[in-house]
Length: 200
Image (cartoon, rainbow, N blue to C red; front, side, top):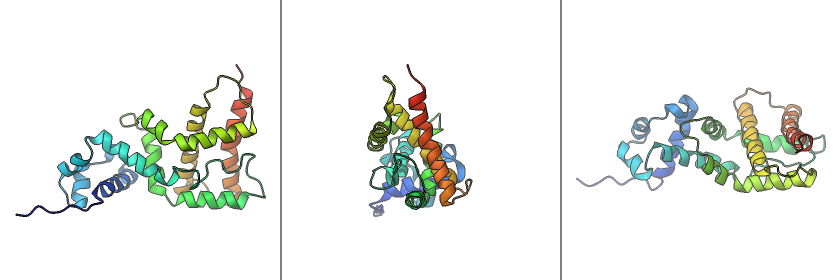
């Protein structure tokens, strides 16, 4: 019998199914047997592409991060001095664009909260380009105390921004231009306040 040819995009199909399952069941509920059944492949096919479940979940994290990975896509700090009436609509449009990626946002937040699968080094490396943008913006508006790890503060800011977007995408926060501006300013001024209040 001839061997059935796999879709050339099978890796991405497997990862997309991971994201869908996580949205419904959480990361701990992802089943490689169910993924295989959904895609009409055998479970060993999955592990031929991803060496183990931890590797699979890590790859799914990177896929979920793709829409947010580059500064030209969705800004994390678009307005260094906060959101006001002059830029409220621009901020709102950027947030609405990000909210289209609901399953990706849900996965990213679940991944950060997973004691079994979270890989600090993977996240730190994935956030690099965004982190540099955040640090650059911070330095343009405030002089932080010496010795602070701005890279870690930027990572935390990005993670909190993703959580804000997730709440909006799930309808847990009311999505109006005014409310979105308040939420964005809360994050930004929280970081600025931390950097100017806590001194060594």
